[in-house]
Figure 1: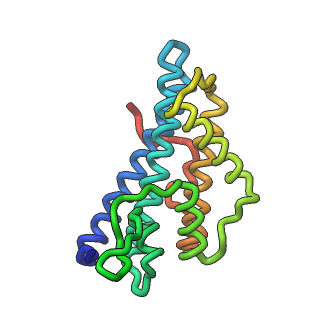
Figure 2: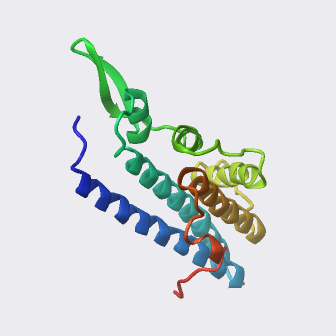
Length: 190
């Protein structure tokens, strides 16, 4: 499989970066609306906030993976994880095959270990917060009972996702995520 031309790939990365930022701003705005609401809509806003924060995280991770694909000298295993494709043996050689989903946590750890300046520090508080946020998200996307979600739990979950995005940026790029300083304050007003 051939890589897309360099210019087209860079445009794709720029577009997904903007989309990821927008998704996170939407997540933060839904959190704000959930905190303000006193009616039945409160839980819906909180649900939207947590789901969109994970969509934003996945978009950021996909953008970073796409950017790393521009590097020379990547192994087949590297490309497999970056592109989320399995490896198959065909016509006497190994090559990329069909779509293969990797756990988000595994892709984050791989990106930081393989392309980062230092490994991700999983003893920091944001990591345990991210694991708790993942549990909340999983309970919402694969429900077995009412998740019992509340404003504080969603706020902590979204904050942990933001802190994780920032940590990944620092490890890989040596600088914080551009939107990190705004914290949980959205720039949207819907």
